Amino acid sequence: MRCPYCNCADTQVKDSRPTEDNTAIRRRRVCPDCGGRFTTFERVQLRELMVVKRSGRRVPFDRDKLERSLAIALRKRPVAPERVERMLSGVVRQLESLGDTDITSQTIGEMVMDGLRQVDDVAYVRFASVYRDFREAKDFEHALAELSSDGEGRASTAPDADAPSAAVTAAPKPARARRSRKA
Image 1 (cartoon, rainbow, N blue to C red):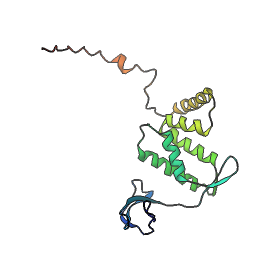
Image 2 (spheres, rainbow, N blue to C red):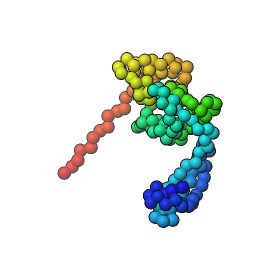
Image 3 (spheres, rainbow, N blue to C red):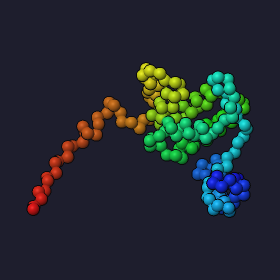
Image 4 (tube, rainbow, N blue to C red):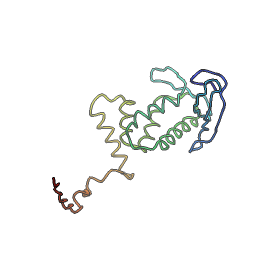
């Protein structure tokens, strides 16, 4: 493994351990020339996947590109990184188990949207808006309608609109008396 700092071809592995979900091996490395330390991840790749774009162009599947897309959709959302990694690994495993090396970008997009729908509704809408190329507000309305029709059968983390809010049902707090400062 080449050192990313000085490009030395000979680096040493200082520590190896499996990731939390056991889908990769995390290796801490050190460069004997510059002393730089870095981490690498080793993953199983069942087959070389090719993505067939809408234009018909074929490009190698890039897990990191998919991870970056998810990071953008999930930016500033309260989702644990472990949950995102599990979802991403699940999507990649599904793609590899399809049995075909050529996979359309549409198939990948639909699998990711299915995963995001289970993880975070806002991230789902963000990803769908780019993937489906939303042009108008009604495109967002359609995506939200899909979520609400899907969400009727599953538990929601959002408060129920028909249920009385905590502000209405809770007894009002008495006002605290202010202490005057003496000079």
